[in-house]
Amino acid sequence: MRDIAVFSGSAHPELAAEVCAHLGVPLSPTRVSRFANDCLEVQLQANCRERDVFVIQPLVTPVQEHLVELLMMCDAARGASAGRITVVMPHYSYARSDKKDMPRISLGGRLVADLLVAAGASRVLAMTLHSPQVHGFFSVPVDHLHALRELAAHFRQYDLSRTTVVSPDLGNAKEAAAFARLIGAQVAAGAKQRFADDRVSISAVIGDVTGRDVIVLDDEIAKGSTVLELLERLRELGPRSIRVACTHGLFAAGALKRLTEQPDVLEIVCTNTVPVPVEEHTEKLRILSIAPALAEAVRRIHNGESVSALFDAPQSE
Image (tube, rainbow, N blue to C red; front, top):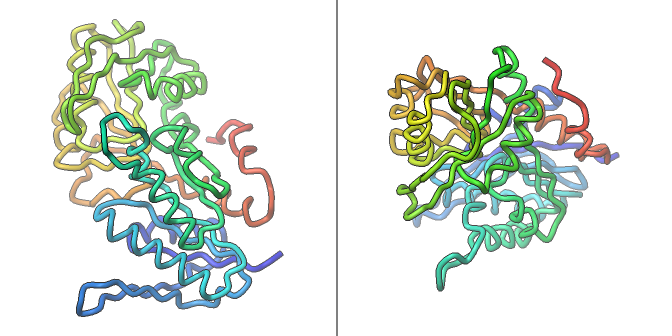
């Protein structure tokens, strides 16, 4: 079996270091510099020849900078004769650009997938893509993980006998139903219509939430407009308690502060797929680590084992 080499871009080096700690391998150094004309230059500072190379980089703000950095890391590894290049992308922000819902718009999710393959990616390891069809945008193998087991392990500390998992929209209802099965809860969903990136309307909640402990589950929280709108509808129905959970806690434009200020929101739970600035942390925020899951997936990919088997057994607590 060829040797393994793990590199990190500048988007989330703390997560990469944690993944390497679980793997028991060193994080290989990367040098990112900038020319006077503002162009990036990337150098992988460890041998790649015939090695199994993993490049860890979520696409987070500034997304375009981190994307170009990732493309150049793949190109550098390919140019250094890497045996195989796996892009470990805990958050694929362009996954939201997955459909032509207006005339003359680009399918950014497919375009960026093509760019990654053109740059040398042999396979992709992703976490909770915005929609399942994005998997098909890639012309190389994709291992698509989710964080439902980590979230379920956290919520099992509570009494779940009167719990309903609420998806903000029907598009995320399947994931919410899978999470509800994991914790033995009921499921409900909001009827959402989006008018703009930060303007949504939820006309109703389909399912039983009155007098119940509600867990609002979404794949990501950016500006938080959808969750805040859903909270308004839920309050009209009288739930007993409300907690909010997501995989990707982007919390843009003061979203975490706005959610924290909601008096009936007891807890906000996310994972560390993306970095959450220390100054954003509040007493209501819980950040769960997905590094063990990513590390195990990397190990299985390297050893040629099944990655889907990760979801066959319950998460140990």
